[in-house]
Image 1 (cartoon, protein in one colour):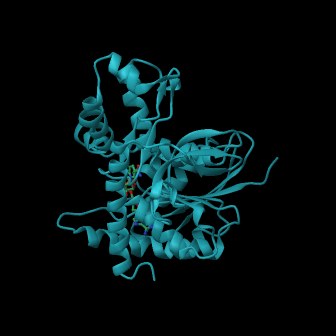
Image 2 (cartoon, protein in one colour):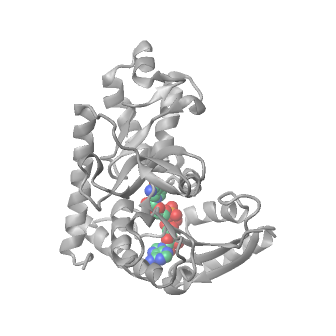
Length: 331
Ligand code: NAI
């Protein structure tokens, strides 16, 4: 038997926390042979609710769950952690400016980055779910001194899965037939879900769509906004934000990152300068995960439309970065 893996979940008393913890404890991330230690972090105000979640986890008597511990101090929660799901964040409230939002979140993600640097395990992997996810990951990575930057990623897998689902529906195929879909840029309304290199059962998706009367204007006016604004649509229809699908995407993001076999997906990762995206910005790219690592899929010849969409989203990432820089959050 391999040694237990310590998984930290922040915002563990929240909605996504509640949707992810039972699946992690059931072994969905690491498989049936790996014992799991869960470190649950939330703010002091949520301590009692957090305790209740821990009680329910105990009540499941999960064979793979070695321990559950609850914390309000990130330094203690991140001690020895191998996988960190940073879900807790400060939501935008009425009248809050973007700079206020970035500032409030910087005050969460800077100390969390430092706490990870203090005590996390050498093989640490971080996925930031809490919004604004890309810039929160940038802040955590900056303060996680000594931890390789590429270990800090942000979640765009939900956007990726939404794009897969929309394309499958539009082409009346199964998601298993689709390859090459990618999310580029920021996890925000400016994101660029790209079909440029996608295939459906081996045929270019754009051709398959065209044969069904769906041309570029369908991609631009229906597909892209549908994917980019799906979160708002879910809120409207369900009466609450995406929770189950977000938790699922976060598990898949981490699981694929650890995969030995090659998997193609999308992740927001510190840019290596690929596709002209300024180095260090946490930007979504198509990636290939293999051997426990990911690499940005390089060498795709982006057309003018794709380049312009990517550039626009990267401009937003730069503006967020410049704001947190001016707030002193990257000092
Ligand atoms: P929620 O409001 O139900 O839960 C958030 C939890 O985080 C609360 O329990 C809160 O007390 C906790 N929290 C706040 N500050 C904290 C801190 N400093 N340390 C630890 N915990 C802290 O929200 P929900 O639905 O669980 O969503 C969480 C985040 O995920 C939000 O920021 C949301 O916008 C984001 N999200 C991101 C998605 C993505 O695809 N990247 C998809 C869906 C949601």
